Image (cartoon, rainbow, N blue to C red; front, side):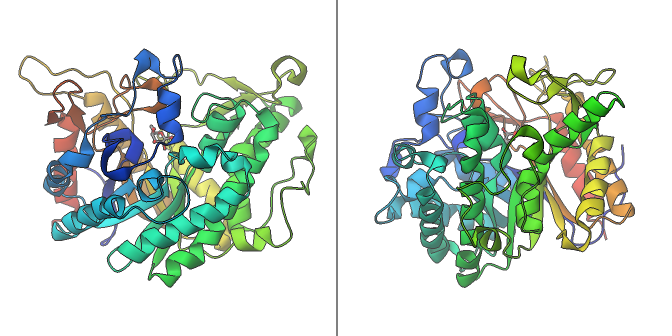
Length: 448
Ligand code: FCB
């Protein structure tokens, strides 16, 4: 399975997130985050798992950086834990927390790996949640402050930044449906949490630039939305879902407008959107991070029965991952070509900042992990990405989720997304077959 050749300078990498890998939750002055609270609340996370230890990356990062160097990647996307930097949400920065990321950044640069930190991957300081979390407009300003102290320390070496990870997933799972921290089930009343995340993003762009950022992205989870049938009702429901999942976060950033949600009775000028906010939110960025996992199939729903104006349907006739997610590589081509068609010149260069799959692999008798399904997945998705580029979409990099098996949010340690297996008893890392495949693929890409 030989990949098509990508242009010189195309970036290859892996992605992780702080709460999913670091552990060391009480160390060096870190404060509690909403994920500590949530995971320690009975019944919230499968098997009662928590991120207390996770992959112990906080102590084992040199080994993990060595694994990345050996893999041959040039970019590492990780996230910075806000509660390590601002343990109580405001006040002076926690220097020991900054020191950790300082060491990590130096360790990466020594190995020739570009650090690409995400400033918010869902681990809000609990102290800010106590004041309303993202429902409180003030949180956006606290975020910009935290970004400033972090960039002041790292900005001499870190030139590329991601502001937020998947605000749609944090909004929907965290605030609308309650499956993730902070566990609120506000349904459409959660929308201020979308706006305040976007405002946080926009406020932070000039802050990062002031500290020398050359490249600023946001990572949006994007899904191509398909209607379950050609009926007018299903098509209308699919359009509404597309507006919520994709356009709610891409339109304000790229166009400076919100999608029209009046079809579901939501006002076009809600009170939480203040004059000037959309100008801040649409401050120019240098790239769009796209996280792609699968398309979404939507049918009309009986809103009175479900509370939602759309119904999720299963995509039939395709392989699924261990998580049950449909494997549809051509959905990535469809998504990227669709983004280009929708936004045209307003679409900045794209980097795939997440794409990957969970597999139920166990070591074989030979001790190796033959995760053939992951190799197939990566090959098919990277090829689909190449097709989108051949069709004229400007894509600059591909980062797979994830380096290591890690704490998969509400699924705990049950879903394994890593190129490297983590034994959660011993914390031993074992590269899987997919790691070796990716390594050879990168050697082939870089041979000239
Ligand atoms: C994404 C998250 C990431 C990981 C993958 C599987 O939505 O950004 O942290 O959990 O899903």
